[in-house]
Amino acid sequence: MIWLTVAVLVILGAGSLVGVRRITSWREKAMDDIGRQEDELREEYRQARERQAELQAELDQARAEVARARWELEEATAEPPPEDPGAAPEKKRHAKQIRDQAMADWLLRQGHIKLEQHEKASKLVGQLGQDMAETCLLLDYIDKRTASEARKAGERAA
Image (cartoon, rainbow, N blue to C red):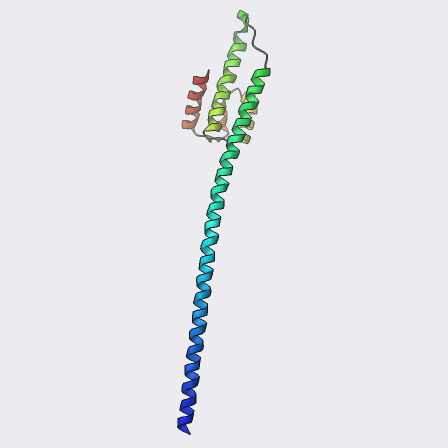
């Protein structure tokens, strides 16, 4: 009878061992599948982020082109300054506008400011009496080095 009990226990032990191995094998397969799915999702996410960056760059470029087109439209419809000798202040103002717009265009093209920042700074330029670079610097949109580079770009355009 003891042999029979030992035999039953051995059979139950072997069966349990086979069951545990099957469960372990199934779990490992499931974990591998989950790992592959996670890798696929990570790759899809990476591609989506790359596409987002590309679209953002296109959007920024389009905004810069719109700003430039607005400026060109304003320039095309603006009254030319009078040519008489007393018109020197008007010529200076026109030259300042050209420099400011050149600075703004450079800042937009270089990605130092966004279109919304450009619009806000453009409104404040006239109110503060500063140039575009100084206004952007005061608004903390750019640093001093960038302001200096923007002024050089403005001077080249004037």
